[in-house]
Image (cartoon, rainbow, N blue to C red; front, top):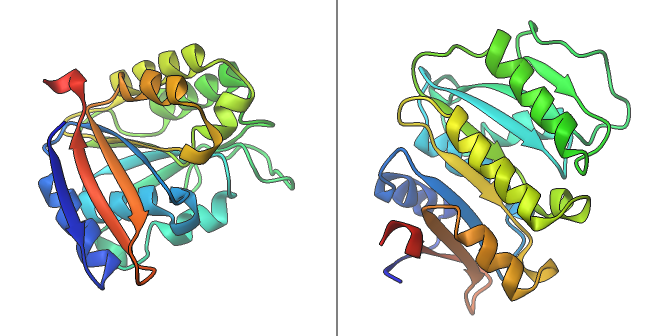
Length: 217
């Protein structure tokens, strides 16, 4: 499995290098010895890879809408990031669905209810998010989805999400590697193009390894 390694003091520079190295359209699983949601790596990578002319649909599974929006602006110029729409499966104080707000949002009661998540995605792609231009998809963490469904069903969801991308859109999916066995990881890796492996170096900084999965060989 070919590997490109990115390490250094500034994580934003590393993520920018990773974004530059990815050939769009691509789907990517972010995993490693650290939980990618702890550092909002999927959202920060989106901020570096996308542009102001792009759109992105984000499925929240670990943090609510407001935290997610803040992370999409980490380390970049705010007016250069994609416009976003959100499927929020986390917020306990859920408001009425607002598909036509400045940040279109569909609220779902649980990340484990995959059928409702798919409905939320369809609502946004069908009525709100432009069907032209580049459209990305981000799922903060697949772990809550797998806890409420089988890995096979989550893989089918990823296949469906890939089909909803437009143009050079990226599919970015995080996962808590330590919460799953090898078989689960192999099944998920088989349906994506790249694996971004994240680990801590001896100084406590992050190191990124961008791997090409067998799916692309």
